[in-house]
Amino acid sequence: LSFTNGMLCCTSPDLLADLLCKVKENETVVWITQGLLSMHHIIELLVGMAGDGCVLHFTTWSINEDAARALYLMKEKGSIAQIHAIIDHRILSGAAPLYHFIHSFFDRLQLEACHAKMVLITGRETTYAVFSSANMNQNNRIENTIVTQSPNTVNPLRQWFENKLHEADTRSTEPDRRNGLADDDAPSDSHSS
Image (tube, rainbow, N blue to C red; front, top):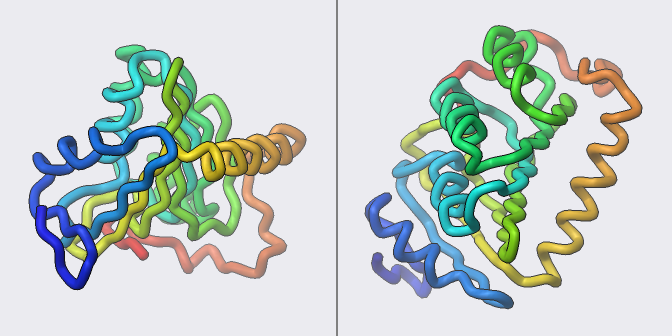
């Protein structure tokens, strides 16, 4: 770990676990990485800290097979009890087999125009909120991440997810094409934003 211009820079994925252990109630940790990890790596570490049976909520613009398989394995092991997600609708045209795979084990899945990268991990005694530029795929870009346990952040995020996913419960998981985005705008598996 190093400080550059007052910002914490994580230079190794191994150091990330040490950094995340510093996130305590009412505290926030912010860092920057240079393509070292995907959002699913952060989720794995935080789920391990929160304990088995976590409930995972997340949004992402892009997800690849490695991330999906990591989530699947965490759910199979019981580390994650439930997965609720909002993913950009272009997964249907850009990665339909991947969509069918995640649809088979996610508890709730909403597809819509989504560029946000947010995560809520709810454990028995601990809840983490994560805001990041990192998608659920590997890339070599500079990414920033904020992790907090602050109730002032966790509680509104939990309410947002519940409200947004309640909308999905009343609709099909098929995307709403009225948003004007064309099918040929689909990201490739390696593309991120």
